[in-house]
Length: 89
Image 1 (cartoon, rainbow, N blue to C red):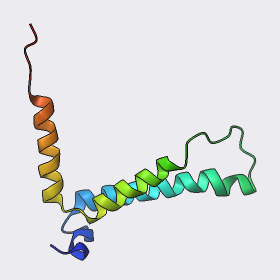
Image 2: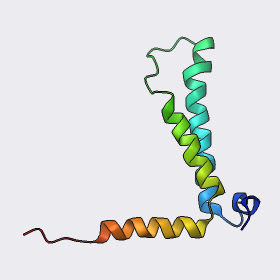
Image 3: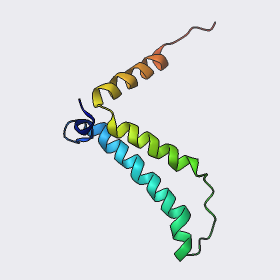
């Protein structure tokens, strides 16, 4: 699949929608931190660091360009690691 097909929400709905939500949320975080204080006095200062929305934009872009099949394989591999039970007696 090409990258333009991975962005198509009809072919990969889970990763496209999730990636878009990550990007929108991080942009809202930047707006609240930098643009809102120009027009409104905030009751409390915004305490999150700049790298947190940047990481969310990176995760959103990765999810946006990832296919659903690859995401399901990665997610199932992570779940298999947590499903393994160890007997520690």
